[in-house]
Length: 129
Image (cartoon, rainbow, N blue to C red):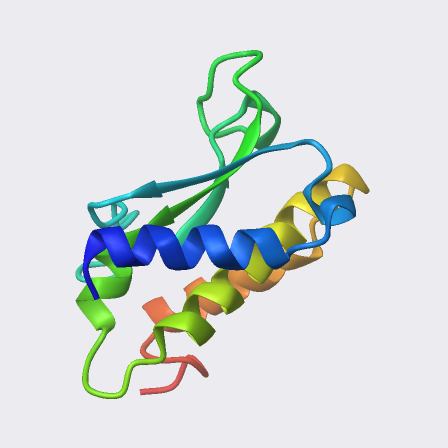
């Protein structure tokens, strides 16, 4: 999938998200390059909430909240039979959950992501190996 086709896919899926779930978001930004791996060789995030100051990711005050998707990170793992639409949709929903939990003062998904990251660092999805 080309970058341009990826952007169009993201735009189409974003339009399917009910407006109530987008409350407080400026939108979705699609970057052509992979995300930085945050210390995991060969593995970068597909999407993140941010970089508004509310997410603590170094954004400027007033920048607002948004979701960032990284085409290059998807491209790195896309192989034969990769379901681009399903993976983008899952990633959008994941980042929307981060956004909604932050509005509610919750961090359940953050804690879940950190557990998964720790397991990955220890050798796999279950932390074994």
